[in-house]
Image 1 (cartoon, protein in one colour):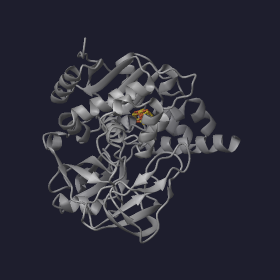
Image 2: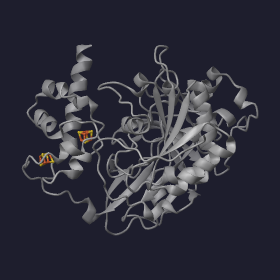
Image 3: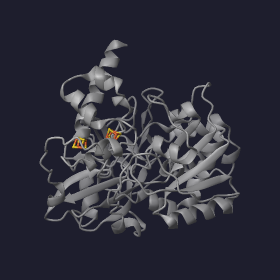
Image 4: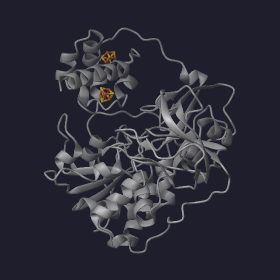
Length: 446
Ligand code: SF4
Ligand code: SF4
């Protein structure tokens, strides 16, 4: 049977307002390229890439500008045609300055000439497919930015039997994956076919939250049309349904052990956007030079879903959306639950930018923190079965060994605990800090 519906979920979680209506029906538009792009050499988890161009070099779209800095690293590419004007540190969405290649756009939109459809791509061996994925600079596009070729190269003792594509998009406000599933279903399913072949998996499933019935229908039709053995799972609408471990539990009923990885239980999860990029990389040798981003929130004059060249400054994106409103407040890259607050609009769109959310002033005000009333709502909400109140107390009192023994490193920083806390305690802030301290301690010990 090809595709079926079910309503599956995981323990814990919350139901924040979706706020997706504003952009879920808006087709993806192309954002005009800016006068210059700023491409950071660190857009992925792992070692930064190393520049291989010099100031004054002429580039076409798709030309390599950097090479991997190690196995867990990916190269970057020119996203406009033009001339390298600087290689220097520039603002990055992580709030730090990072070595970046700046390219002045000549407006010619000239592409590297070996990019195009390879009609024999399905006959390629696994190694060549992985090489093309690596050469294209792919890193997880759901926001995690883990290098895709590494996820496709598990150690020999980890047998993968299940490939899951993540189309849940459970973060409020974001609709970029939803639109991609509606507008590019074939690329996603063909990309999934490639991933399936590389991993040698036995079953493949796409998880989509039940609040996207149009995407479920379109994806199911495409799978049937292409005659592929993948299933669609309609998931319960609950946050964080799209987190890797929660998605695996909902679809396979398997649990990733504390401190473990999905590959420990035979699973690999990729985002639907990554699957589409895998198709481009393998079938067309096309590097990752642009991505779909949702620009939304009460602080944006004209919200949109945009296809944006990587390296486009946020200020250019907002100008294309009519600018910000007079009462615009906090700016977040990603969604309100797991996104990163931004302070510099010169920072650029990177491979992991799924959304740019602008709240208004009222929404941006932090509520006054009150003493804990021991209601345990944070415990009920935690999808990782942790004790958020206790963890934050350990960290406040610098009892990092106790926090470690209560599995603080298993926290996925989903923000569910802080969302439900009636005392407005910034639990995630303390837990993130505690994780950092525990990781520093482990590094020192090694
Ligand atoms: S403790 Fe971590 S995983 Fe649990 S709800 Fe809070 S942020 Fe999410
Ligand atoms: S939800 Fe907030 S008030 Fe309730 S137990 Fe947890 S930290 Fe305390």
